Image 1 (tube, helix red, strand yellow):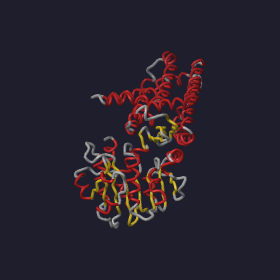
Image 2 (tube, helix red, strand yellow):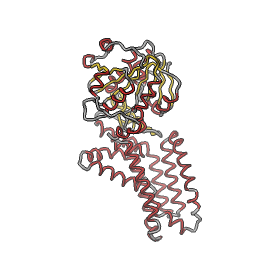
Image 3 (cartoon, helix red, strand yellow):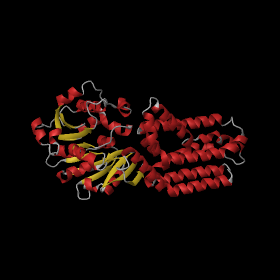
Image 4 (cartoon, rainbow, N blue to C red):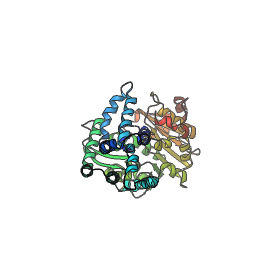
Length: 461
């Protein structure tokens, strides 16, 4: 549910905060009111609240993408952000929390059955639930929804809700589970068409929810496909032609046969761009489903079926870099922008310093900033300033609004700027500007270094 709401809000961290606040607010209010409502009112309102919560859960899960237009509209107003978050807080407060705790204690106290024992195993049940989430998500996100609905129906049965009410709840659950795939595709198509236009998005051909993110693959016509992670476009042919060249192919020309480490896989077009010019590829990503999706839909760009010099490591990039004993000629940072703590930590001084230790004596770390250095946002300036703090031997290429940074080992003797300029083999060669270390230092002067301690500023910028 948080993944779905993150797509609508376009702020994963805010979605988590709002969800957490609403959850604990629901529990707190429930226990506060539990002994202040008469048993007569319990019998009348409890079934209604159960249906309301179930309906809102199903609505938020399936139709949260519809909030994209609503929140985008509100964000343009003076108080739009406050109204947006307040609205989603109220929806989650009712639909995603234990608000039925308002009624549950009194039912247990007055029940003929010995339901008090359920309090004693509440913590045990919570632990079991948390342990089930990951294996069920790996099996199927629908399996997690089925478990949730089964728990709901079990609660209704234990509380001796009328059989007619229970039957309606079972029927609603059954219909929803059967139609979940179709409902999900329809709402996904609406979301991406709202975001990128009806003519661009033809259809959604694959959707997957993992413990880490939401993955969508869209048909954009002409045999081309788009990869989106948590509602954000991660790969499309037009946008990645330049990106994969400057991040991957260009720095690889400074080596004869480099050993390459790719942090974050996405479509893995960076691998396909270097192709068999590399000695080996080590592809690292915490989410194996992204790798599987790319193998299925983006072979045209990554060419992995034709290459036999690669290995995939299912691991967090930070953990891998901190613990591997290997060193590489070329390390590519192909991780999405730092809009969540998980990804933002790979843009910190501490992480860049770790990466530098994994470079060979003549190694290069390649990373891009898609935010112009002269923009109102400090995102790009802070990132380059952080890299300059770690890599004292470096250069960059500015192409249109993007800056492609190459941090080198201290012992790497770089060719002069004219030679580096001649190595650029790109259709828009004349639009590329070489930036020396001094050029970069001048442009980012005064920008704050990104560290683990202030990474939150980067997330919420």
